[in-house]
Image (tube, rainbow, N blue to C red; front, side, top):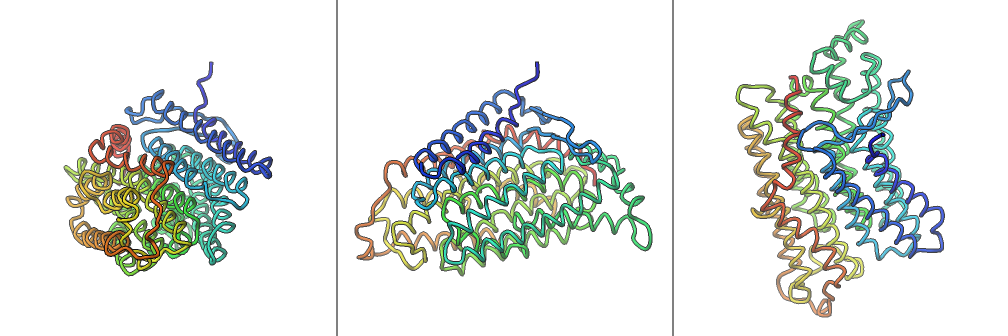
Length: 517
């Protein structure tokens, strides 16, 4: 008897439900919402059931499904899950659930909106579980299409340009990544990530690349660098790493709150996931050679994005730059591990940094989605206003809302006892012994982050209550429950990070054992 196909079913449920909602939910908006929530609930049960059914603490791939697809081209249907994948699946389910609750105010073509969100969810599931490049790339691109239409059809006044920027930047990065992996396939005949990692670990990958492409005046080292840069570009756009970030602020600002929640909460993690899953194990040697440059870009991303957030007056643009800043710490951790290589006694530091990176991905997704939801509530109650100077004294009128949003703000700035602290602490705990100069240069980003987030709280929550907001309604019971769940998780993961680290650390240990620098 074949084992239950956990990952296939997990991907097909939102995909089929999304296509069905778009096809038959035209005149039945309430039914479309019920179908979307039902499909989401089924995926939640499957993700939790998967975590209980497999041994994630082994660090090895679990629930593997592998079938030939186009054998002549090295294409397989190849999926599996480990601690990294499962944590990302859980984050996808949580943020999508939050977005579904926040979607209640969508009145225009709700069936299409719900259908696209479900298709996006399926694309994310496929991206976080696929182990063959072509299979993974198809889901990578599948997630781009519904995201483009969600911004293009329901966004703000500048939505057309924002959606076009998002699509063109991501597509250009995807083309560069596709060309890079095509070069690897023609040199090695491999498309599966585990096999490519094995070739890299044994030192065969770059010699094969040199033999295949190293003719003329180009050396194998040049080709290895070109392939590495192509794959890095495709992943860096998605993070995004400066200077490939320019699409993000306007896209996040123009998208409606549920879409902004999905973009910052989950889609931005696809790039960091690719860095850990693909770039580090396959391109360890080119990464180490480019280590100082990569670390410089990571520090730039951390510090400059925090400074950019400090001068913003639009709350959504401020949070957009804050998202770049927080994911810059993930870049710092990954690049520090690669730049340091296998120095004596570095195992603990490298493990700390990578554990922090994965935990930061999850924690930032949770807090950033919550903050964008809160800004969406501000915007909905104020008739579309979201400037930092538009409010003041809201704590007196809406204490529950301000309290919950305030907790999310403190989690975002890394207050001890909340989830944001642990990931950043582990990253710096690992990076400082490995590359002290990069850790020191990135510290100002932490300080500037605290300044702009606390300034936002002061301007929005405190001071005299403006007369036009005297009748400001506090959260409804449904909104309190919806926001209360992620806020409760911020406390739980702040005092008990082992709830996730018990699954993450075995993956990190196994990954580090297989790296070659």
